[in-house]
Length: 65
Image (cartoon, rainbow, N blue to C red; front, top):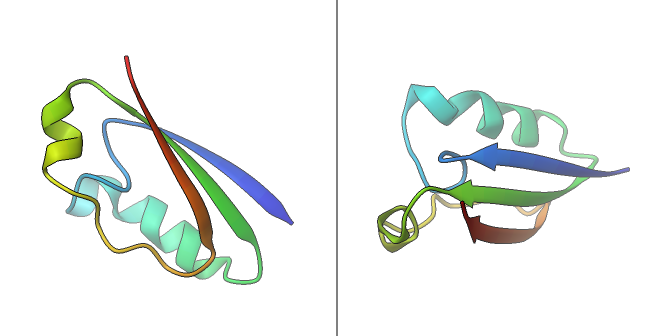
């Protein structure tokens, strides 16, 4: 199954407990593929870099609000 995950100002750019649930979800459903659509509030979010994604994350697309 292919799943779209829509986030705002968080996964895969932010780190810490605030976005840990996204990482646990993606890693816990390892038999599914994920496309992550990340909405960011500023270019600083992207400049900080992305957290490492597991192999089931097939694509990450980022758009600024």
